[in-house]
Length: 165
Image (cartoon, rainbow, N blue to C red):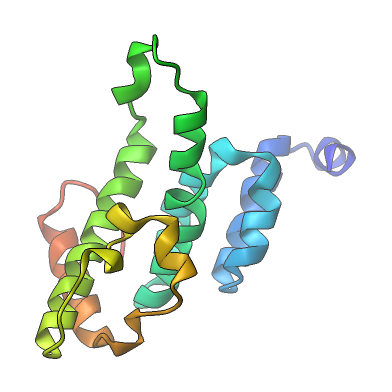
């Protein structure tokens, strides 16, 4: 990888991010996770940048955020924090963006679930359930994708964050 980046005149991290985003574009989230395995600090960045590549695909967006943000990045923050460190509450803009996108996905799934007459539980939340949601399987198949996409579009209009849907 280093030799390829040197010959092309690119930064190694740029090559890693571009490769991961190409997998996200092809909806191969697991492969993107494998590319980023050695670079866990790039996971929130790829999750935020990959959001736009999955326009109108809430299931894939949910899988992206579960794989790259919730399950690994928050675990990394917990491992790196010490009881004597006051920086635990600090978060980068990208981490805040990922939290906001997960929150918006939770709202969209809540509305879609209620719209289809089913009850919504906290286990369906990306922010609250985290990796447990991935282990329970794909529960969002019962949701109405049109309603989810519509709610996400409306939330993005109201948001100061400009992530294209």
